[in-house]
Length: 200
Image (cartoon, rainbow, N blue to C red; front, side, top):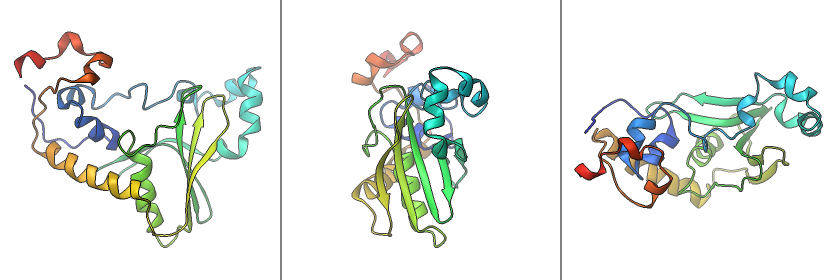
């Protein structure tokens, strides 16, 4: 069974480690579908082509203020754990964080399902140069929805829960063992043909 002491590529890789360390080992670098929502993966490189599209163009124009200055798929390098933010933009002392979802996608910001945005919110709101952090969810071809507005260092419970989970998961990660952990997540795993859960 594989071992490694390399850090996780980003925080969501670490979150998935709790489900199945072996799968995390195999998937630790490429993006998975739930990390990069379909449609959004075309931005910013295909922006001009999308603006000319008869269906997508008018939708993008309607929300230009949100995406025009947005940094897509921003890797925020932090020691020891990197964050890969779907979308982020700054307006003076206000930071906007976006969870980009597939078309028709429902917000998945529960502290057990998604760590990145909560962790980033907790770090950003404690900075002196930031007055507010706005957390948005935005499905492809849908409208952006303000999920949370955080003005003070009085952090929501989700931030504390995520921080605790990150600490526990990183401690396990540092042990360097990537054993398969069979469970319900196996049904949705695309790696069944190379899985070694029988060896556990």
